[in-house]
Each structure stands twice: as C-alpha cells, then as structure tokens.
Length: 408
Image (cartoon, rainbow, N blue to C red; front, side, top):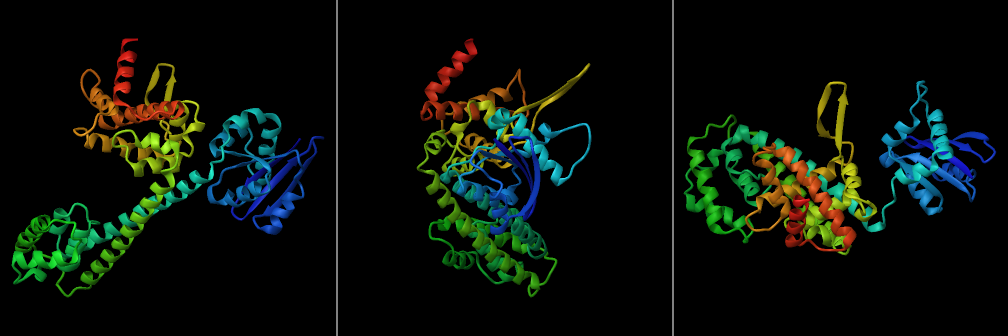
C-alpha cells in the first residue's frame, strides 16, 4: 500500500509518497489540470492520500480526488497537529507532508476513525446555503450600524423608536422622515397616510399610526447635528436601499434552505421539537452535516465545541468551561433554538424549557449562559436519541424519561 501525505497551501501543495518498500519520494504540484496530472502519476490502485482540511484551499483537491474515486482521508487540523507533534521544531511544507504520510503508514486505523467524513450532496448544498445566509446577515448588520450612526446625526430619537431597523416600516420612516424638519407643518394623520401608501398592506394601519405618533412627537423636541439639506440624508436613503436588497436576498436564501432540507429525515426530527424552527433546523444541518453519523451525543457536543474542558493540577482546579474548538456557527444556531423555546414557553410544552428554569432556581442558581449551555447539551441528547430511534418529539415521553432518570 502506498501512502501520499499532502500539505495543502493556496494554489499549490507539497506531497510525499511513502511506498510499500519504504521509499520516500517528495514532489510538488499546483491546483490546476496540469498540476493534478502530476499527482495522478504517483497514484496507484492501492494508494491512500492523507491531508489536512484547509477550508477553500483544499476544496479543489477534494473535488479532484472524488472525481477520480481515489481513497483519501481529510484530517481536522487540530487532530493532525497533535498527532504530528514532536520535541524538535522543524516545520516546513515538505516536512509536514512527510509527517502526514508517516501518520498513514503508522496510525491508519486511528485516522480512519477520526477523519472528517464526507457529506452527501443535500448536506453540501445546505452547508453552502447556511454559510451564505450568515454572510448576508453579517453584511446587513454592518450596514445597519452605519445607518444608525448616520441617524444619530440627523434624528437620534429614531434609533430608540425603531428597535428593528431592517423592518419594512422602519426603513420607510427613515427614507421619508430621517430629519425632524421634514415633519414641519404635517399633521399626524397626513404623516400616517403617506407612510401607509408605501409599506406592505399586511401591516395594520393602527400599528403604522402608533409608530408615526412616536416619531411625530419626538420631532418636536429633537435637535439634529446637521441641517435638512445635508449629504447625510442622501446617504441614509442609500443605506435603506442596501438593507432592503439584503432583506430580499436573505428571505430567498431562507426559503431555499428550508426547501433543500425538508426532504431529509434529520430535518423532520429536529423541527418536530417545539420552537426549534424550520430555519434553525436547516441551519444546524448545514453546519453539522448528517447527524446520524454521530454514534452518541458526546461526539455531537465535541463537533460543536460544547464538550467540557477540565483542568486540574495539584491543589489547583479550574472551573469547567466548554472547549469552543468546534463549530461556533453550529453553537450559535443551538443557542438561538433555546432562546426561541424560552420566548414561547407559554405556548409550548418542552422539557428543555423545564430544565432551564430548574437550573435557574435554588439549589443550582446557574447564570443564564451556563443554563443555556446545559440546555444545548440536553438538546443534543434529544436530537441524537430521536435520530437514531427514528422518532418525532413527544413531550410526554421526554417527561417520563426525565422522571425515570431522576429516580435512578
């Protein structure tokens, strides 16, 4: 069996081949058609390739090996670093590729159990859509921050009146009345009617009038930092147009995420948990992949970075914290799920909500974040159990299991 270790860089890779006769051959290739032909010349039917995941840099290599049906193992960078560690510091791309090949020759069985497993096509699509969704949210937040800064100069009170600046009503109010001078001589009824003409008819006129009344009253006492003909007014209008464009694209990606995930069994299971939500369920699958590949909830915890980090030396003992070495985006989605459950606790029956408030009361008295992480741990237990047993969420069963666990 031949082993090829590859150290992946941007646009090119260093590789080392270790043959069955223990012969060592080093070579280099670029990530293009001619470069992959060089790699292909060293590949035989019994060749295994090992390399670290390096995000977008290793994507071309992964795609090529899949198309050629070459057996390969993609290692987590942290896993590779720990396994290749030595007393001597001798880090070069060439040496790293040799160490990766050596791992394949000496620890192949362990590598098989710890390598990144390749996701099926629906999960790949979900991952791309999930990353795009987060990118759009981040871009919109950046523009929202710029918008709020500009409003502090023209009409600061608008920032307090409209908590969700990306909402349709808020954006229209910013466009039309981002300076108190624009309200001079207008009655509340005239202002309400003007805004009502431009916003969606799904927003009730009473809601529009309520917000307009707040803006109308605030304008009487507002003292802007710039005049009504300032360039800031034009800039605010441009910010509103950008945010509206992001809103449309975010809504499109949301619907596409749900449509892509709706056919998956994992999605049906996760979204059956009250207030987990279809969008959050799709995002979680996008960031974790096929949940059925995890044998138990501890593996899912470790993947998301929710496993505990314990440190004790002599008489010193550090308090338990989570590792945070896994998917931070997956953790954020699970936190959103728990928050959604807590916000809607009056409408649902959910054992995770019960557990959260149990931790908040004596004798535990846990802080909010500690209780949230504990609930995320319980959420992962629930998800793994439901996925492996092919069941949908049932509060009665969850409550009975909780009582049985308490009595043990």
